[in-house]
Amino acid sequence: PPRSTLCPYTTLFRSSYQSHLNDSWETISKFISRSLKIQKRNTTINHELADFAQLCKKNGIDYLVAKGQTIGIYYPHPMLRMSGDIDFQIKDSYETVKPQLEQVLSITLPASMPEKETSFKRNGILYELHTDLAEFGSKRNRRLWAELMDQAWKANYQVEVNAHHYLI
Image (cartoon, rainbow, N blue to C red; front, side):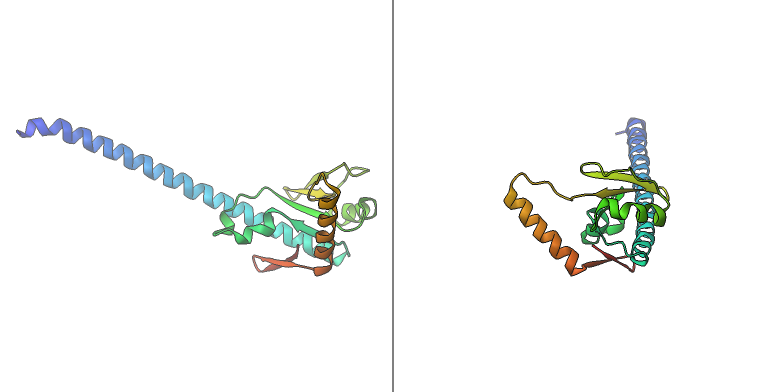
C-alpha cells in the first residue's frame, strides 16, 4: 500500500502504544511508591515495637505480641506486608498492669478494661491491648485455648524482626 495509507495506522498505533506505555509506567511508579510507603510504615512499627519490648522488659511487664508483626516474617517479603497496629496481650490482670503501662508508655487507658480490647496510640502507632486473642463457644475449645496460652507464657517464644527479638 502507498505510504499515505499506512501513515494514519502507524500514527494510531504509535499513539496507542505510547499511551499504553505511559499507563504502564504510571502503574509501576504507583506500585513502587506504595511499596516504599509500606516498607517505611513497617520500619516505623518495628522500631516502635522494639521500644515497647524494651520498656516492658525493663519494667517487668509480661506481654505477648500477636498477629501482624509476629507473622510478618513468614511472608515472602515481610516488609511489603500491610501493617496497621501492634496487637498484644498482658499476662497479669488489667487492673494490676494499667498503672504501669500508663507510666511506662506515657499513655492514658480506660479505668476498666472493655470486654475484648482497648486501643491507644503511642508515637503515631495504634496499639490494641487484648484481654483474650480468641473467642470460642464451647467450653472444650476455651479450655484448649487456655492451655495453649499457658504454654505460650511459659515457653517465652521469640521472633526476630529487623534484628530485634520479641517475646510472642
